[in-house]
Amino acid sequence: MAAPVAAAVSNAADAPIAVAEDGANAGAVANPNWHLSLRFSPDVLRDGLDPLSFLRYLLTMGSMVYAHVIDLAIPAADDMDAELCYLGFEIGFASTAGREEIDSVFEFVREGSDIVILAPHSQLTTYGHWLQGLPERAEVALHLLQSGALTAAEWRQLQLDVAEADDLVTTEKRPGVVPSQIRAAIPALRQRGGEEKKSHEQKFIKIEVSKLDQLIDLVGELVIAGAGASLVAKRKKDQRFEEATQVISGLVEQIRDAALTLRMVQINEVFQRFPRV
Image 1 (spheres, rainbow, N blue to C red):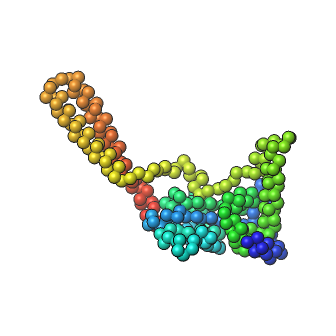
Image 2 (tube, helix red, strand yellow):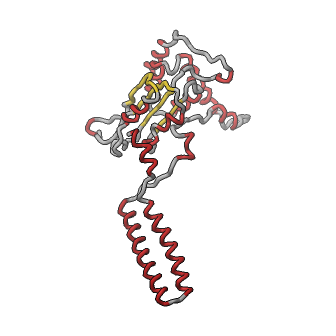
Image 3 (cartoon, rainbow, N blue to C red):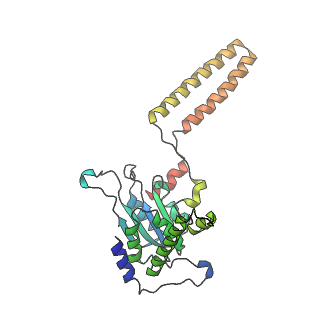
């Protein structure tokens, strides 16, 4: 793949390069579009979701400038599972929507997926760090050059920055090298979808339905037993006994309500996500 990338760089060498005039944008790429790197969860089809439906909904917010399908994960025919998703997508997207609005498109499919959203005119180092984390970075780099998301000059600079960072890493243990200098040379700028909405994300655990049903059944038996104890306390006309059973009954009701909510989904999430599927 190195030869096609070199060829793409050579072909793009004469292309006009946009240079940021504002000093605040120094080091930013010329690409004026959003870049979306999508790797849906392998189980997305088993979950009853269609990756293309999310792309169709995305198009209601803007237009697709370029799109590349990454198919390197497809196994041999004998090893292929028809219920698994093997494809990835690299998409250039022109839109006036903000990051949060674009990220919300993939809210329902974010779990188990690797979704990276790069803003227009992102820092070149951001692209570099993202590419270094991709197993198929050579093919993705070729697509970026062919589509104009990165210019030849930006690609060359990116390679120089990576080489300089590698040199600093090799001298990490040499005298006189300050760790903070190394950290500054290799910034952790990986941007994943949903990064700005971590405070709003919900955490889930998966358990067997049978265990949850067993818990609810036991809670039901506890409610019946508590009601029986309350009845006995009233017949005995023991004030302390009645007060104790009332406290127990209150706690049992709280446990019952909490157990029942384990089988419920917030209705606002259902109606927010329904149009996007």
